[in-house]
Length: 594
Image (cartoon, rainbow, N blue to C red):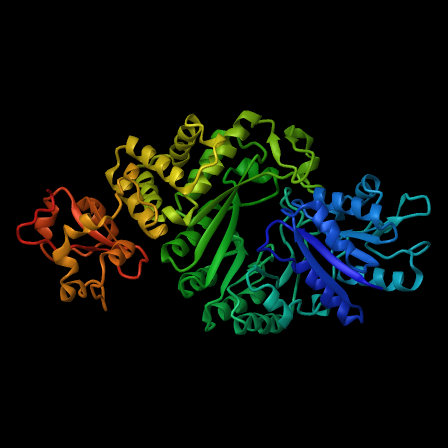
């Protein structure tokens, strides 16, 4: 029997861990499956064509909120042109609503409910012999009777002993996934029962063997994997399990980055120490706070000790070694737009490296979907995103969608890190609301009709420059110029934001400096003057205020007093950021203020 496992990933860089687990477990039971992955950006007919070129008896689709509608479209067409093919669906988007899917999609033959390794293998074993499940029940498999009506098990199953599931990756995978994200898990389940999520439905957590996990992490390191993204719902829920893993990750000799989803509530001194002292860039953590409003947290069965969260997260951010990504959700019970703004300010004041704003998804099978008291309106199609609630009208949801877009483009972009770190510090020091600040930026964005335009990087930079200029913050404007030079490697040069093209004539005004190789080597080791074109490409001279120079920490160990009394200081910036910015030495007759 020829079996193919497939899914429609949301992006090309994504890969399916679930399919690889199914294949690995099937192989351990003497079965062989092929894996074929597509994306939701591919035309449906192209996917259909590729599938039908293969000799397939059974095809299994992994279903998620980002692909369920397109998957059902594909399987309907597939059954039309290949009526004898057996179609099996699995994944969180079908596990809790099997009968609904079977009624809606006549082309679907079976649904795997829950974790599929054991039950899918049992299904294939039975179909290989009997061709049908008629008069036979497999726990976790929902199918159809002779009249096409749903029948079989209604159980959503778990694999009790994760040690029976083999390591999902092979040498061949390392070649195929060279430019994709590698997903991995050391545990399944969640100890919490957040009502917007499916992971804690059974409130159980199971672990893969610890020694095996460490050896598998070493395998990734040996294969020079760029990033391993753990999909454990709460990585740090059991110290006996996660602390040895954190110790191994911190001490390993590798350039591999490890992404962990951690619960700040469960962090103690040892977790904080590992995250503060790990090599820079080794670990990045995602911390889902979701809200800081006690009434909201109580409604969704979640507990946050905000004082503890601040205590453990602040030193990690300040250490600068571990990237900290924090999450909020728009649309939770009782949280108005104004109250959401307070949650936003709470998190922003910690200055995380990224603050992601998500919108409540009323997932099928989640507790919150059944909560009638909050009068939710939401998109009936996946991903079931909230449109309004008892305290959050649609107009506020719409504004917050624009707010999220603007915040994501600018603050969460690594391209403008210097200027927004400065702005954040100013807001915090002055006890001003970051939510109000970015709300005003959003209003300016909407007033310019930017939400209706397809903007390029230059357009966005010009908008931000204009916004900062209206605030009359010279340091912020100059830090934006600095970020643009570094982030875009000098390729965006426009008078609109005060960055003129580095013409030969302009650079020749400092010809004495560039032609004095011995002098330049004090700042740029191994420098030699060859041609003006190369200097124009690699270096940018910009005049900055003394306050900006101070903020950037540019060395002013010579002529310090003289430089500060002048209006502007000429700074030379290496666009590739291989050497630190420095003050161009002045000729005796040169005035920095002229």
